[in-house]
Image (cartoon, rainbow, N blue to C red):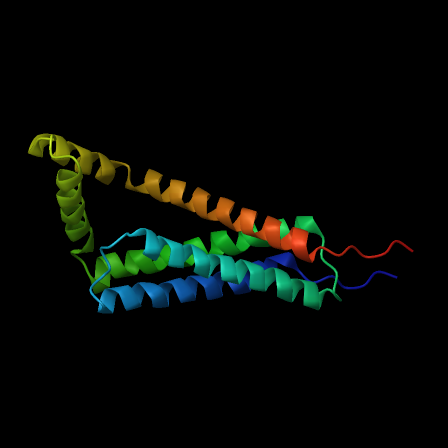
Length: 173
């Protein structure tokens, strides 16, 4: 007799959407604190912590819904799924933010980037800095794809750790 196993996709979608919403709240907090152009290690750590929390919560809730059982494959699928959904939600928010809420955001970000580049590399000429910024503009979507891959890999690694810790196979009868 086969029991109904919970759907990994449902957990990935729900917790990915929640992680994306939490990321949006954090981004809005940065915006209202006028810190939305900062990309410090602390801010990056908080963003990754938000994702990690929701990946672990998804794995825990899935195990609970599955009668206390969890296999590693389901945990890995869930971690990658939560990260991918969260990234898509965050990207949609970013597009709305940068085109409607703060239409000058990208130009301001490039200007902040120029200033940082010149401070960190005083030997660069203004032309070299401008070339670097133009390169970033041309490869924006490639950079976004790389960030998505990093996010999914991070979700995968977090779910690997959580899955190894929480793994409990169903007994074979």
